Image (tube, rainbow, N blue to C red; front, side):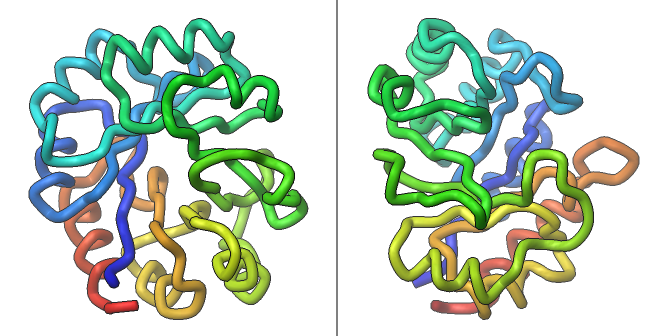
Length: 196
């Protein structure tokens, strides 16, 4: 089995097409208005339509109104909704699309009823990737997207050690705040360079 790859923070058709052609399994579109990677849903729809049926599409939200999440998910035909805030099970149960839920190593994933987890550093955390040994224990029981601090240079090591369901990258494939097409291709190639 090969690890799946999610390229997040897609903001233009070129990056979406390059990522898809290089073998990305998921493309992430950030609908958090305060994020530097925010994209207007109407623009996201144009990009999504350019790669529809070639890749799974994920919408990233943080503490948004449930009605807003469901409307965007329906309008854009999202395959998954990624929740990156303080959403609880009551909120999650009202989402009409499969959910990827953000957790840190301090969380208890078993308390959430979701399809997948996305393990990342704490929201305000900076620095290196999370503790790989602790992350490895989580992957034994949970379908896990591994995120936070990944780059083309370290992704293969993480895949080999942690064996996650998927790896997720945004900042690690950027140069000067913009998605770097060569880094996207390199990241995907390196991540998929090992069979689990």
